[in-house]
Amino acid sequence: MKSTSIKEISKMDMFDRPWAITDVETLGLNFRIYDIVDFALLLIDPKTLELIHLMDFKVKPKLPEVFDPESVAINGYNEADWREADDLDSVMKLYSKLTEGAIFVSHNVTFDYGFVDEAFAKTGVPNLMDYHRLDLFSLAWAKKSSMPGLDKLNMWALCDHFGIPKEPSPHRAINGAMCELEVLKRLMAL
Image (spheres, helix red, strand yellow):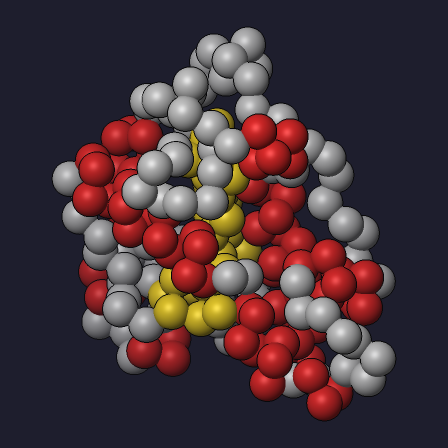
């Protein structure tokens, strides 16, 4: 992985800024109610799609008793496995440092960015990312004519279409981010 200083990133042209592929697993779907329990970042070079930095953390929820059973069934959250998890404040401090000047990327940017933005607000950690965001769902929508037979644009359907192995269960944010990177590579090649 190559290294780029934060000063270099802040002076970069928008099209040269690294992309921050971000995936979160949560205790529910509403960022105002539920906590993040798993957080992953793949910082990548936008021209080569090569990995610059990887971040993968289990996050200790502040309100573990407030959860949607369906979400917990998907991500496997349980107190025993999260006993050594990091607190949100320390995760967001590192994420802020690593993503300074970067462009946020995810599949369903509304969901992931909503939780990340709320995490910045809850912790008081500054969001130093570029204000632009890339949504893999929207990119797939724009490329749909190049993918005949594809009738859904969720991550599972895209992985299946491109022959990318699906995320193992329970879902971890790092597995989701890695799938997103592979889908991004295929979409950019269309």
